[in-house]
Amino acid sequence: MEELDVLVLLDVAGLEDKEKFEKHVKREGFSPVEGESFVYTAKSTTTTFSTKAYILEVFKKGLQKNSFSDANLIFLLNETPYPAYYYDKQTNDFEEAKEEE
Image 1 (cartoon, helix red, strand yellow):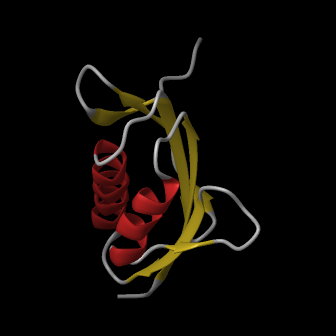
Image 2 (cartoon, rainbow, N blue to C red):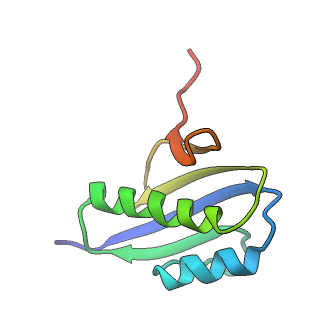
């Protein structure tokens, strides 16, 4: 399996404890991009489907350990962009953002 380059951009408002959040994502294998706020890189050796699921789970758990007002997430796997996600406080999960027609 070839290694995937992962880039995650999180847009979060009102995050209570950034240090606690970043400690969680670092422990799960994501490194903050120096000079950028809420941008992380990682390497993955699993399938794109598994990597996508892992990204959503790690960032969901990190946010759930904190209080925040809202969050949006986008990521690239080997420079291929994936759909944007928003955190739905009703379901306590990331939901794919639907494009308006």
